[in-house]
Image 1 (cartoon, rainbow, N blue to C red):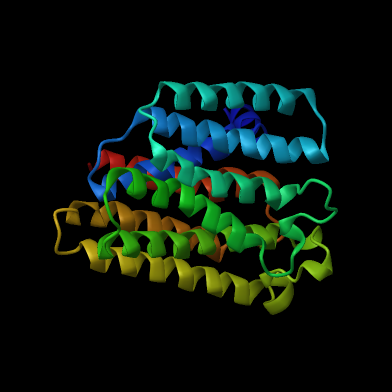
Image 2 (cartoon, helix red, strand yellow):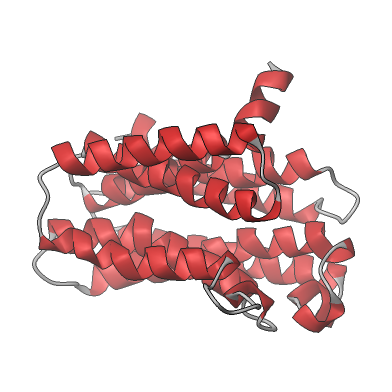
Length: 260
């Protein structure tokens, strides 16, 4: 079982599933049906993007196979979906996602810009898994949608900053990541604050609505995320972060789906 999880994690299938979890979470709180082709598109495209960026660093047959299969799956799911102009909103996210690790004819990708790494990841993730579902299901954004978007941004910032703790020994000093700037303990506190604010924001938003049944799963997700943040350190293994920290996003989707 552990070997299987490591394989799924190393091949970026896991991160694709986690993106799917975030999409399911959004659909549940928006009270819209889960479009399984859209779910497949988001999950497979995420896996393809991470595989592509990995191949740029390490050309491996495994990653090339995963990239090929996930790309074909993404194209097929897009082809068979009820495609409309709303899907074009994914193009900027794709461009920024690729630019995060690779910009043609330019030596330094976006991730090399000081302070910006986690912001790119969080914004692209929320753009695809939260903004996109809202955009294709509603005629206009309302206050509840903006609350959900900002809540997810805070949550993603809180989770993503933990990966900068993991990468502390490997990131060059000129990146000026948050742990490099304020230290590990302060970064943990920042993560705790962001996750807490995210939970408070969405709980206040839904407490008097017909989505109040999701309060318990949101609290459980928040508590598990806070526990994760409190014990994170640069000594934790790579798979601790890729399976457990990323897994919170998958858990977020599964648990609200159970209460739907």
